[in-house]
Image 1: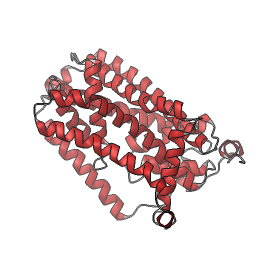
Image 2: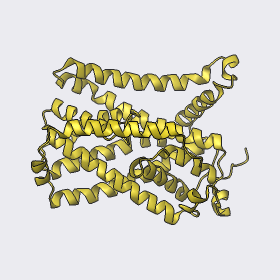
Image 3: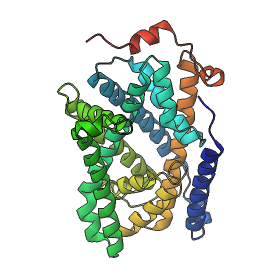
Length: 336
């Protein structure tokens, strides 16, 4: 993969500054002695459960990407798809570099024999599917959170966040109907192709039903993970409360102005815990534990990809692929 420009490094440093700044502000009001006192055997047990659940989440993500490719009449072995997801987790969570997880996945998909354009579109559409499920959960909980929020700015902010997310999805799906004169313009063509890919995936008879199931399931796993951690530290938080506050926190963390959502997630969760009447120190503890679990999952994912993938990390070092014929056969385009 090509080296990144100084501007990319600057953006990464800026994101790191945002994460550290927000975390520093939040930590300034946290009693770390009391926070550390909550760390016990129950937390360790919850951590093991969290790692198992997050690996299951990655397996579901691999199946979702396979379905996206299937909608485009492309076949990829499940093992190759799973390792691709693990590679993305490694770069997104465990290696805050200028190489994003999605970029690494696109490169790896191309290495496996997918056309570069399809590799990029399929990864983006896969992300769109996940984002759609997240926005749907936020929309379901929005009336209850808005009713509980004493500050109208919180309710308005949540509403704007959800409507903004839905608006982006509507725009993406509508681009396929762009007039032909504009659709064939060089600058618009990639976005029209992306819109067509998203439409094909979400409304294909072969893939629509399983894709819809995999829209929500990963986020339900996240909710379960934070609930396990909340109970482990002695919180009285219910699963329903976590389902209300965690999806908006993840949606806020998805705004690309920090490193892997650090800082934004903690701030949003502190706010959400306050809305449902839970202490802010519990929100910080739960968010940090979830974040550390995500990092460990990324490290495990990177290790599994490096060991199990035919090229592993050697492909990054060499800058080229030596994919086995078997993997290329799995990823080869089927004749129409």
